[in-house]
Image 1 (spheres, rainbow, N blue to C red):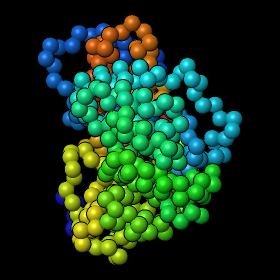
Image 2 (image 1 turned 60 degrees about the vertical axis):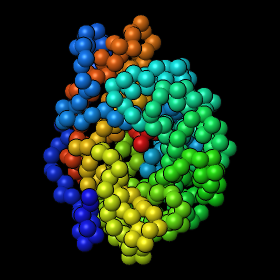
Image 3 (image 1 turned 60 degrees about the horizontal axis):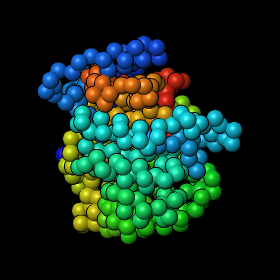
Image 4 (image 1 turned 45 degrees about the horizontal axis):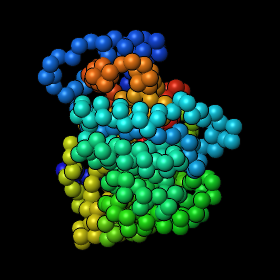
Length: 379
């Protein structure tokens, strides 16, 4: 259980170490992948654990690298302009390929699949993919969206088998929200999408708010106030140094302990146990029974030791960390005559060598030149 409110989520001392993950060359990664695929799996071998003893539980699948927002912390407009070279259609995984690789991951222990982007609702006929993934069996199938198209899509997504949605919403006041998404999109239409998702049964909804100092920290308490008692869970996320285009600086981070303290002053909070091992959000409940909030403190309270997530990029590369600088090309195996068992061998071998702990060794001076962008692998 998190500490009592008198010492809420203390700012972690950042260990002054250099990130020494050092990516191997693409050629070496490809050679490792193919060699691992062709190695015979031990009969009755256990589900893979990584080098730090972490299981493979969650798979996040980016279905598109495109987005209709240009959020300042993810896809800044000065980088992702009209002439930005997004992936051509032939390089993007097909629904059949996504379903095939997802089924392989389920066989390796994955119990939760989240569809991300970019903005996943921009992918045509996404409901068909949801239906295909839902047929895999007892998995928790979820989706993260900016909500712009959710009012139109919520019912079809639920009918196809989607269980829940998480909606990104960084402020309730229209001026701040339009500035954050940087395409002048009104907050009212996202709220309509949230209402539609609730009506369709995509519940409980989670509302994700990235907090950047100087931009929207004033929106924290109004967001908590608005959704308190609704059954929706607002999760406040520390501004992270994902990718290298968002101009991240440590002094832009509003620490989770500060976020919780701001809300606690108006609505007293108490800590709550995690729902499961590896849950990223630290949970806090309103003492009067008005529901709960969460804080995701990747910067000031790293949770690498419990991370059970793998990420599949739009073009089929497997990443073992949100802050990675390189991935493994599963698409190559999917489009060549490798069996599901062989691809499973390769994925298990990748996971067993995983030793990522970026957030535990981050400093304000950590190099960020080659990091993969969030819009490419999802958040």
